[in-house]
Amino acid sequence: MPDILTVEETAAELQVSTDAVMRLIQTRVLAASKVGRTYRVERGALERYLHMNGNGVDARRAAFERVLSIAERNPGVSSDDVLDELEQMDAAARRAASS
Image 1 (tube, rainbow, N blue to C red):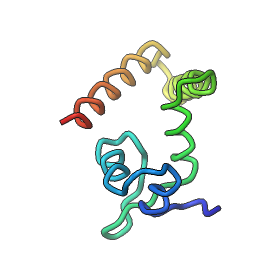
Image 2 (image 1 turned 45 degrees about the vertical axis):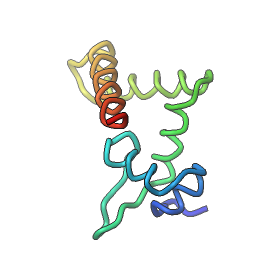
Image 3 (image 1 turned 135 degrees about the vertical axis):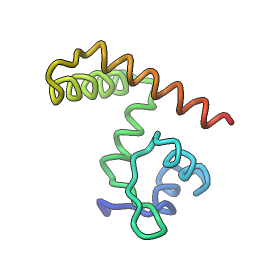
Image 4 (image 1 turned 180 degrees about the horizontal axis):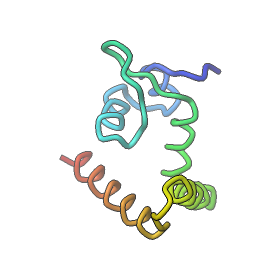
């Protein structure tokens, strides 16, 4: 498995259309890098997306670890501040995806 995926490869992995992947990228729900005119998705970003959007224990654990790592990298920022920011980002992404 390659560590860097094209939009088409990402869509195949997720079993969705390339348009769906582009919406995830454009709303910043799925992290990607623009290379020329196309996007590339790191396998780790795809795995984080799947963990963060799952509904099981692993998803909650991944979200908690993400919050703690962000707070640890930013002295003076509490995990509550990070959670508030993530909730705002998620709400904005949901609004953008539904419009």
